[in-house]
Image 1 (cartoon, rainbow, N blue to C red):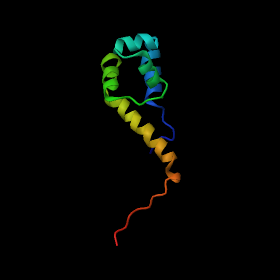
Image 2 (cartoon, rainbow, N blue to C red):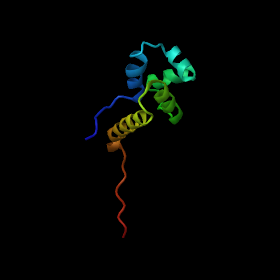
Image 3 (cartoon, helix red, strand yellow):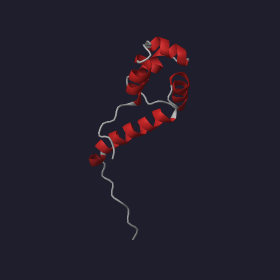
Length: 95
């Protein structure tokens, strides 16, 4: 069963890692060795986690890098299903 509206991975990373460790975005970006703006965009759901960012987050704060990718897939799947009615494609049946 799919979640109707799962959170973006950035939201979970913000609450479960950055805020839980009482870090500022600037300090977390410093720890991850990325630009503050890059991390901020992820935390505010403007961009998806890249493999490199997921690896950095996993190394610095845990969990492993698979977790943000599973979250991103669930988020993308839910958003796509919300748009399904607007996509008019029918199953191909060979003659």
